[in-house]
Image 1 (cartoon, rainbow, N blue to C red):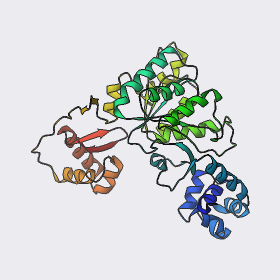
Image 2 (cartoon, helix red, strand yellow; image 1 turned 90 degrees about the vertical axis):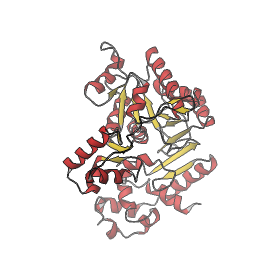
Image 3 (spheres, rainbow, N blue to C red; image 1 turned 90 degrees about the horizontal axis):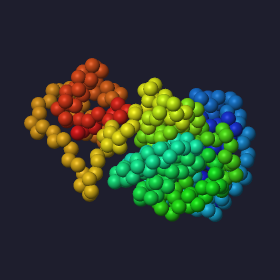
Image 4 (cartoon, rainbow, N blue to C red; image 1 turned 30 degrees about the vertical axis):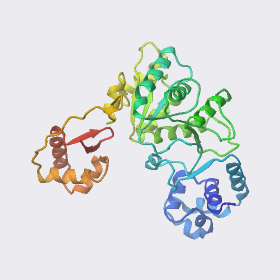
Length: 368
């Protein structure tokens, strides 16, 4: 029996300890130490307190964790604890990211470009056409596609990804001992067979209960660089996912529809309320994401920067910060530069006008 995994699984079984509290505990000790720590120590940890400390001290159900390990080993499932190297790094930026994930597949969960494509279960022909064309057009970019393996737009997106040679991962609202809906069992196998995968935070024997789907949706939103809403009514899972993505400061795009069509009401609302960017052209999407277009095997040449540019002291400070990473947020630049926010804003504006740096979605900047 794998000792580390046993305690990691047990941590997810403790009553009153959710993902947020688990991460608080892991800042003070590892999973095994949580169960050996004194109650008086645990209850002093901010965010834990006496009630949660008592739940930890009273926990005895290690047999359920042992059962899950046997299931994992039998079906060759990859358990991904929040501290594991293969855990989806984008989720770490979400305050409520799952403590443990269960993965079946080969797709890279930390691929350079990941897009969530979501929408209604009862889609129109228009939604299918848009989804098929969208995936086909972005195929040259080697973008990984994630969705929820549901009827409708989700399934269309997964199938289109397979057809165009893109890895696609289905995020489930239940354990890996079943597929819901059952009609998508064949699709799930095809996804795994074509270098995709299935991912869930739910243990075996977890049913696809209604309350599991919002939890599933936060993984869809948190794992992706951008969420594209193809078609949805004003209520439903896609709207929840879009709201979650906004809350995580992710980029959200929506396909506009007729104002008389209820199945496009959600997309139109997201656009109208500035919660999503209107998406009518794939080229615009790639440009807004800062992803280069590809023509055949050759990248389209970027606009050439001026060679001899005199930079101010403030501009040099910003450039030096940007050289350290692929992309840096405006908040980090303000914090690290030691400059006033107005000085940073002026420096960034000048650098953009001189094509030295590029602005990315989410208030990020990188060297041009």
